[in-house]
Length: 256
Image 1 (tube, helix red, strand yellow):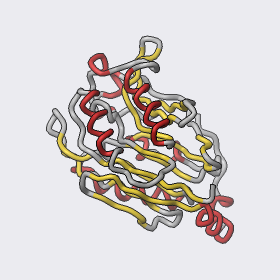
Image 2 (cartoon, helix red, strand yellow; image 1 turned 90 degrees about the vertical axis):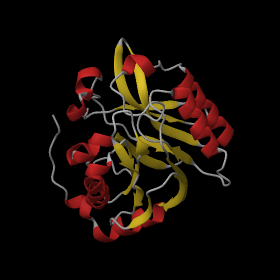
Image 3 (cartoon, one colour; image 1 turned 45 degrees about the horizontal axis):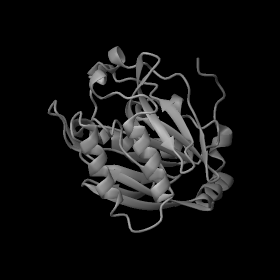
Image 4 (cartoon, rainbow, N blue to C red; image 1 turned 180 degrees about the vertical axis):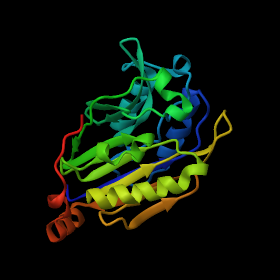
């Protein structure tokens, strides 16, 4: 497809209450009055950024995963975001990309957030993935991954770099700057979907969900609870990559 229309769900979250979060998000989805290709939810959208995985975790056939599959069918759009998944007796902060045909692609957060003790309760992911959807190559990453440009490095010629997050207000300037930088250095659209509100630990979140083009120009930005509808175009990527050729001049090295 020449373009993708995306719905970014910037919302508050109910602490460790998956059903209430699903209901809240579903109400917002019901207010989308136009066809979209992908619906993007924040990090740990069913629970908030909790270090109590035993309370909220589910397996890959759990209620939230089934809900995502249902929403993908009823909206005829892919739906994605991260949630707490138990797999082989281990817990993961796992990004799920659920397609309308029921196929699910997964990415486990590589950089667990040591400041919050995430590394003590969640397994770190080992594999970067590229999702091919409607002819677009999408690289999904999660929150703290944003601080590590080597992991996001565009060696696959992806078109869209996508971050879902629970990024708190005191460090929101870093979020803004790094999203823009990732777009510029990778010559890719870069989208960040963050939550708003306050969690059980007293951390405040001010949103700043945003869309940047391949030159780092902001296309969308928000600080309130809302569904942000945006459209991105393949021709914009091709135009600047063919003209400027910055990716062809990148250094060659391997990540070990």
